[in-house]
Length: 382
Image (tube, rainbow, N blue to C red):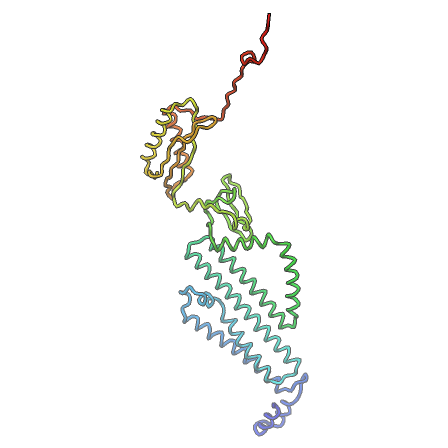
């Protein structure tokens, strides 16, 4: 086809020029080399022009004010990737129609395909970033600290998937047998799954915690026999600052399946429940007087719910007479529950002292009788 074009244009091109264009260098005619160079120049011009055009369109769209996936995606340097993708497609079309030698065409198409794959991968990476920013915006909107940790976790996971899938696609363009690689990874994955069952369980536990949000960082919780403040929700475990100021690390698989008592979510209503034991030297009148004094004292407290006060003689224990004191009180956000509990306990002690009652402690009375008094020894005869 190229020779026909040159022959038809013979009236416009001199014989010397035709001979030069038809001459071969490195197994290809000169006119094809010139056309190839012009095609490369055209691809670079298209790339530059497309990038400038996309940049100007971005500035006119005012996407910085929006909070959508498209706006977050377009805020990144996507014009470079889009321009290279368009240029690579144009270049592939030109190369396939130049009738180049088979080997040269093969390598040029390979370069263009790799360029196309790399920039598609780059755009997918930007899309993962945009998804992370969207999740982060959602977390801040919901004012969820757990969501703040979900955003980077989801972003990292998406980026890893993008890199893995994109790398496999690029390897396939190089002629690598990707199916064999995946088959090998599948066999290795089965062996790894058996060896890392706990790790997989913890990862799914992490996802469950982040999506369900049973607590937030900073909440006071009780999980199994651990009570304290949530310091961090990691990829594998949750760290709790215990009441003894130590850090307890619980696997997320345990946290996800165990009962979580979120003490912070009491919404300001706390419970006081104590069994007060007094000695058996206390008279019924003293015990009754004590119950009346405690009941009256609590009803004068504005933070105590008067309808849920229970003060009653509960039981006769082995070494004490027990009185149940149960009521609910309000705690303001700036107040400490422990300090208020201490105040009520001290009030109980003062009221007990005013009623002249002594607190009991575990005691046992041992009665010993002589053998002669019990009549177990034979009487002496004279």
